[in-house]
Image (cartoon, rainbow, N blue to C red; front, side, top):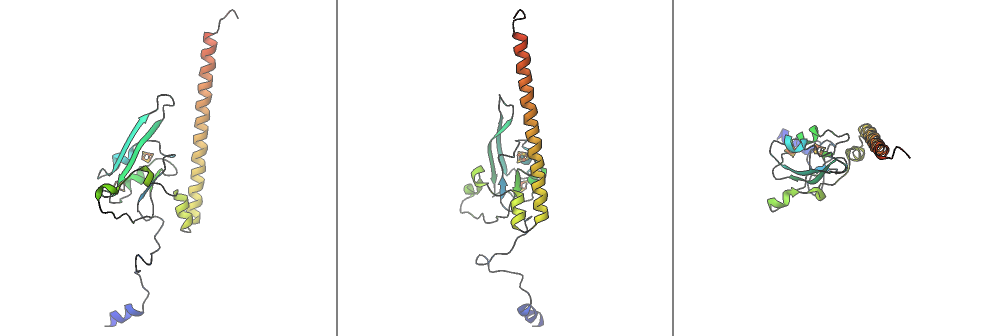
Length: 178
Ligand code: SF4
Ligand code: SF4
């Protein structure tokens, strides 16, 4: 009786879900969020998944030689939200992260396969900022800006190389008497 009374007047740790919602940690692992613009198509997440819950299809663009992602899907019915796929993702900021949404109940298993259009969501920075983890969000923003800078530098170098090759080959084919 003493324990019961203690709990009656004590601080409540449960909520009346779904009318009320608990505040989740921004690091809570729920539904995946995938950013196609950040993904480099390395397929590491697909290969590391212990239950083969990730389905990826990729191809190499013959002109740009970049890897393009044709399909990225996660079977939420198989996934057990271990977070390994997020851990191994080599991009900064992560092209794949587990977001805060955990409401994925469905009546048939097929609808638990989330294709790219259902895996959209905020970047990690936004998740942290909304949760009030400002320092972590600022770190993410800085890392993201650095990554974009590096990518832009690589693109510039690639364009310069291509222009150099174009000039060299034009010179090589030019008539030497001109
Ligand atoms: S969270 Fe774990 S089980 Fe789920 S897709 Fe990622 S690696 Fe696979
Ligand atoms: S590990 Fe990251 S970058 Fe590599 S394919 Fe998966 S989401 Fe894309």
